[in-house]
Length: 328
Length: 285
Image (cartoon, rainbow over all chains, first blue to last red; front, side, top):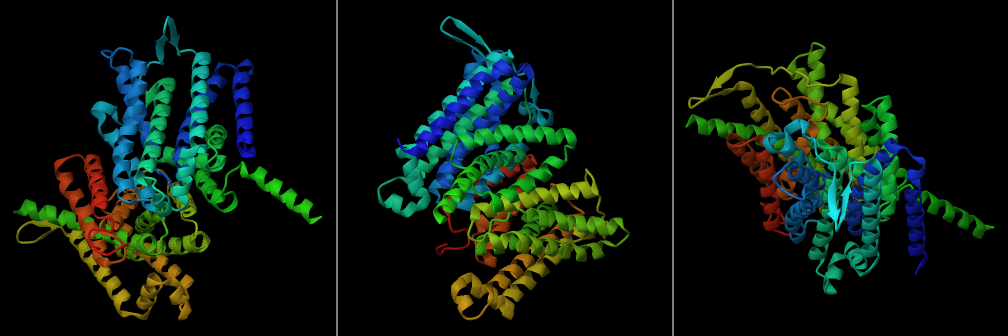
């Protein structure tokens, strides 16, 4: 096991331990805050899985989050459908994956990469939000849909009801941990290696026999499916779904979470999501219109000062000290 | 008959605006490979310039003259402060320009307050065109846009600065080798594109809802114009504008605007899949 993997697992274990110990010290409200932040962390990890490994930036990832959320809401609010929660989550994941598959097919097999892909996904996000606002007979328009029931399902004899704070926190934290671990093992294995090869030089990777468009497509679909899952979880916890969930601002915020946490680390984006949302709540309670302004500044600062995210400060300091030791 | 002509003129209005907004984008995105997500804000700034001049008692025409200047100032600053440092880092350019876009939007909201700003057109009433009557201001808009485009074509094909631009685009190293200051040429071309987008914003201000967030719709559509039309030629720009603008205005009659936008997006994606080099360009990218 190489040192980088060991370090990652170590940090993961520390985070997991903190997540397990947290309920001992936190009250119900604090639990729900962290729970919601973790869902957005899952969303950030889904973007990082695609962006971090392929180098292609998706600027409308909230579209998949929103699609997942709306599908979950529509299925669970319909009394005629049994097992609403389970079917809802399955529908949300499939729906987001389906949309990603269609768009991704045309783009990847059409040779669209880089900036072109970013632009098309940006427009996709804009249109999803507009559709959510204007298709009001289904989506509830501007005000969205309210009264979405909490998740409940049966595992064998046990009935699991996530209307309470602690069970829902445990459920979400478990899902986030499992998915992040799974994404990490995919991206460090052969799959990730080939993606890195495609990112470095797609023509060469294709010459070695790798079907580059297909690999990019499957990665994109997987990423969108997890974003859909995060959306589905979020609407059940929040109890409502609104057009903002598929909007440009959320697409933008998730990019910041990933960029601040460190692109390609999967764990960094989760932490980035938690910390930045904490900061957002503090700043917004002070003055709500200040947040987008600060967000804009954060973008510019990241690009010029911290291109590899907050976690890179540690690596930089380390190399700084190493360099000094060598110089002595 | 007159319904047909009205639809045609509506389409022409939208196409004119898209051509002007797309022109700057064709320069920065198509030719310099810079993905500038703050391009929509040039339109917003132009529209706000007209609003500002009108609100302090100036005429619409004075505002329209201020619009491209405002766009150029913002564009020049953006190029100088951010974009020129990031020519070799495309993803960073996307992030940084998006940051600037957010800052500009929120800055305008802080300065001018929340809510739509009223802009009155210089001419009320309609113009009789034998077949149909049509709002006079829209006809003026189309005429100004066409004249501007003609001016740009002449500038690029007939002046020595146009020659510099064409040289830099074809081969940057070679252009430097023969003594052209490529940095300066890029900066001027970028500022110029921003000014044209500002003019488009000023022109569209009486027709549109003037909001700090208005730029993003133009941004998405202008990118489609450039992507669908293919980069590198005025012909591609016109083809892309006709495709996006024409389809949008025809669909707007039948269905709701957002559904129309969604269909235009899908059509654009399919068009890109079928003709990766653009509708107009047969040659390689």
